[in-house]
Amino acid sequence: RKEVEQDPGPFNVPEGATVAFNCTYSNSASQSFFWYRQDCRKEPKLLMSVYSSGNEDGRFTAQLNRASQYISLLIRDSKLSDSATYLCVVNMGVGSGTYKYIFGTGTRLKVLA
Amino acid sequence: DGGITQSPKYLFRKEGQNVTLSCEQNLNHDAMYWYRQDPGQGLRLIYYSQIVNDFQKGDIAEGYSVSREKKESFPLTVTSAQKNPTAFYLCASSISRTSGYNEQFFGPGTRLTVL
Image (cartoon, rainbow over all chains, first blue to last red; front, side, top):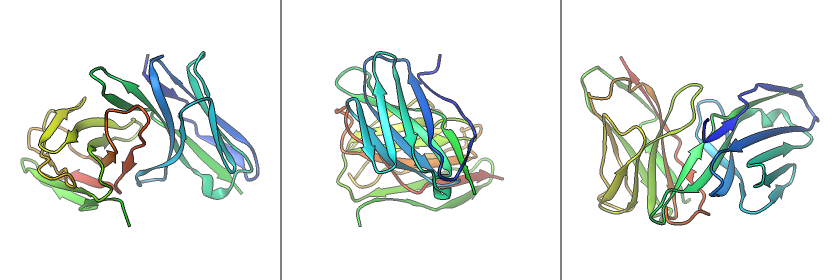
């Protein structure tokens, strides 16, 4: 089983729709969680950090469920400019007081006019 | 503006050549990382450094080398021993690697193509 798993998509949604992605992780000791947005042939850019139960920023809401070991990203009122790949990243301890970032392969979103 | 810069943006290499990718940050971050991204795959860690003059192998270090002589700089050399070097290379930094709550920030990447 992969350490971080995401549905690759693509999720094709009309403008204005609400869409949600899930990301599951295997290590229960994972400390923190992040959603990054990556546009085609560009670097990942931090969208949201999730340290406790969740986080909200405008149209974007991230939820963490530690019992079931998944995080979700909800996008409300989708815009054409939201079209991108969304990467789930988990930060987990690897011993000796150090941490490692584990990346999912990303979920591709296409918002259609 | 604080950030991470990488150069060049595009790099073409002949088989058998070594090439060096530049990464510089002015965020005063202790930790720096090199990742490789291939189509349909997640980012894979090549090397990381927690402090000046110290670096550790990541998951796919074979065929690569790094140095960390200055806090701001973490260059990556792709050697001729790397069997399949064509990929998108991303440099990142974080405040440190000894906290589970630090975000990583990425440079714009270098796209390497072997001819």
